[in-house]
Amino acid sequence: MKHLPIQEPLIKNDLAQIGASSGNLIDTFGRVHNNLRISVTDRCNLRCVYCMPEDVQFLDSKELLSFEEINAFVKIAVTRGINKVRLTGGEPLLRRDLSTLVGFLSQIEEIKDLSMTTNGMLLKSQAMALKQAGLNRITISLDTLIPERFLDLCKRDGLAQTLEGIDAGIRAGFQSIKLNTVSIKGINDDEIVSLAKFAREKQIEIRFIEYMPIGANPWEKAKVMPAHEILEKIDKEVGALVPATNYDPRAPAMEFVYEDGKGKVGIIASVSKPFCQSCNRIRITAEGKLRNCLFALEEIDIRPFLRPEVDTKSILTMLENSVVSKWAGHQFNTKEFIKPTRTMHAIGG
Ligand code: SAM
Ligand code: SF4
Picture 1 (cartoon, protein in one colour):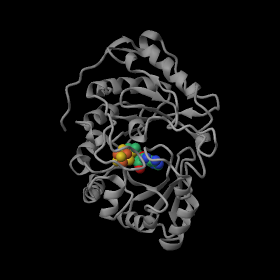
Picture 2 (cartoon, helix red, strand yellow):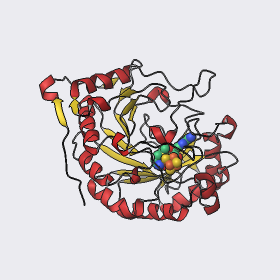
Picture 3 (tube, protein in one colour):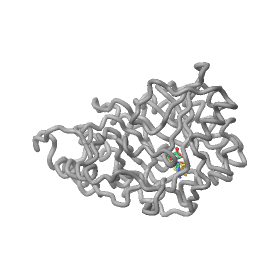
């Protein structure tokens, strides 16, 4: 495995110096935050219509947090109970030498789960290195099995490459591989059954996500394929489903297993059954903006406290402030909902 030379950032004050006490990140609604999503780039090799616009002004590479800065931030966050980390983007595999970052993070003892969400296009050549560097789990997005539709939906040719990426991920032997499918009425809802069958044949879990108002396209609620309809279709046409007994109630997906024991289906019902009351996530964007919700309208810039030197004390304060100012939940289903100006690829899904 190739590693970039490690250049530890300068430390202005570290945990030992400031005598930081431990304590979890708990918001005013009592939600404990242990889950951090890190976006490593806002760039993407696809342009999924529900996620990002065709023409985008991407961040300059100098604006991105370096791997050392991300590592320093995570080492601080774990002292406040963060123990699950997911790498995302944009397309995380576009970030050069991503396995180097995975190698850094996998050495942080407190992290119990290190995962990544990817479109899989570049996974074939990187899966093994990521596994060896310590990545535990991987989620691959797949919305269609029809090449022309892939082109329509993602605005780039790439189904064959994505399918190769899925197979490479399976071969690499990650602890778990899942598929993510955004199901949109009139666009790809006619593939719910074929995608569920595909996942069952590959012996991997598939998760259907309700279409959310976070992309570049104007969102229409009428296009949301509700979770119960997805489940009914699969139950009727693929195999009888029963609720899984061993799933984490704080996780966004409701999980179901086939009655015959051959496979699992997850449903992320962000619109029809929001799970905000059990949210345990915070996010950091590729340029170092801390966000306490996917739909947050405000963010905290922590890069100045990581660069040119790491100010641990201020970062801890920002983490606490961010979590304390978290709202009860998104307002999709009300007139009060305001769409964030950042689209999904620039936040980190
Ligand atoms: N590029 C990677 C990928 O596609 O997996 C990681 C980033 S992408 C933003 C993360 C996840 O967000 C993907 O599974 C994608 O399908 C999902 N996503 C993007 N826009 C969405 C939307 N408007 N509604 C629901 N899910 C969305
Ligand atoms: Fe890229 Fe992922 Fe967004 Fe598609 S969903 S445009 S692959 S970031």
